Image (cartoon, rainbow, N blue to C red):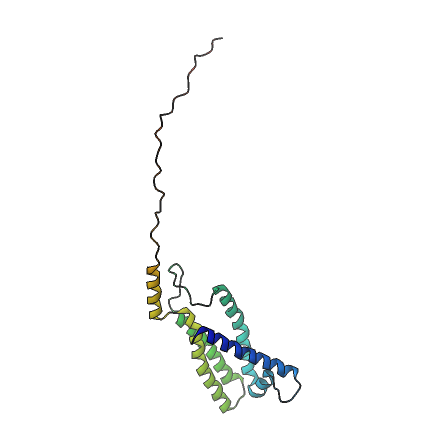
Amino acid sequence: MKRSLWISSFLTVTVTAVGMECWAAWDHSSNTVPWTDLIADNIPKGITMAAIGILIAWLPSHFTSRYDRGSAVADPLDPNVDHPTEPLFNRAIVTTVVTLILDAVVAFGVPISNDQRAAVIAVISVVAPLALAAWARRHVYSPAKVVALVEAAKASVPQPVATQDPPRPTLLRAPPTPPPTFPPKSA
């Protein structure tokens, strides 16, 4: 998918959702229902609170890393940067821990029906791998991309620059003359 199409689609969905939420909050009709009511009526409190906790913990680090990264492209292939050797494995661990926490909340902390439990587990099992793939994608390159980047780097390698200044020409000078000597003064 082209970047511009993705951005315009994503922003359209976001603006629509936020606009509908604001409309539902300001309109006092029973026909416009805000997310808060939909969530409170259909999702158990424990799951909602766990999801809110995860968002509160995740959002600051997510935005901090994005601002620190500076650009929206994948990590640069700079040999001077210490890249993790297993970027996907590290992110898989985080996703697994979050999934286990949500599973534990469902299994032990929330009184929900078996159908609701199955639905929550099904959603987690679908969303977790997709979230992992989206999160980890910017930290890895496909082999074809690596080949293209290496070839581009080879094509744009500057010529080596001398590391020392060339020797300066020396001017021929006469050796320094000693200072004149004067006879001692008599008293």
